Length: 334
Ligand code: AHM
Ligand code: MG
Image (cartoon, rainbow, N blue to C red; front, top):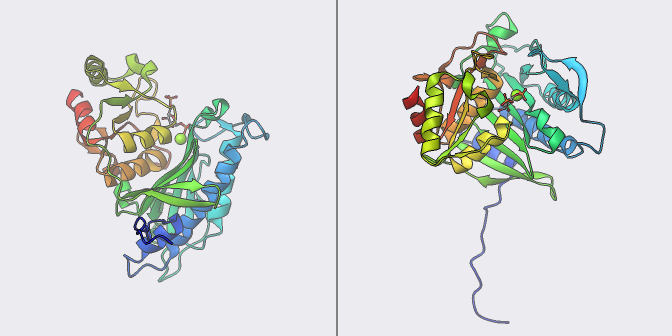
């Protein structure tokens, strides 16, 4: 045997999502494990939805179901399948009081809270950007978790909290790999599903978004319908050698920006004067993830998305999200 010492073995750097959640829980002495158990339901849902998405065009999961959702949009079969998976997995968790989904007009009250208990509300977009599936493009799930307010008399009143009160938020990106990005209010962490072992493995801890990058993400086909300030920003970007990147699925675009920097925009348009994206289960969770990574998320100059007081669970908002330097550039033009 050779006596030459080999490389120092790396010890303890493989962390799964479950291990990460338990470690985070230990930072909160009052934690009962209820939130961890809900996050575990989301992790199972992510694996189940990923398995369905991978079967697009093989199994009968593509195409419209012939019904519209509350937004008046065509529901795709996979929207409905993903929604049912989330309702089934979260529905079994004692700690979930209310769930609200892009696909359901009304929130679903699962159980009421007794004295001394702590329960949560989970809001989600089950399959964001689902029309990308027709062309094997990336899609995602977005979720937001709020503490349940037992004093609220109607489900809506418990849900209508500003995003700054989210206790956790995340997205799952179904792309060439399945990525779970999570914040429990102590930074933003990223995990990739290893299909060989069926577990999400941590790939980024305390992720930091690049401070600036010459890249913007917006549906430029709507350019003439944007307020003048946004058009002025695009003129500036195009005069200064920026790249344009747009996946047509917010999860994929924000994921790229978290890793490579830039700004994602969905401005108000003449067709959608309040913006298109939904505050409570699209903009708020993304804003929390981006801010926890050192980025910025505004709906308009001086208006932080996380401070918006919601008035309806399906309410829409404009979004300017990304690297702090690029968000400031956009705001400077508005
Ligand atoms: P959806 O929730 O109905 O899938 O719509 C949300 C999606 C976002 O993921 C994406 O950024 C945006 O809508 C794309 O909209 P557009 O086609 O107007 O560019
Ligand atoms: Mg959506």
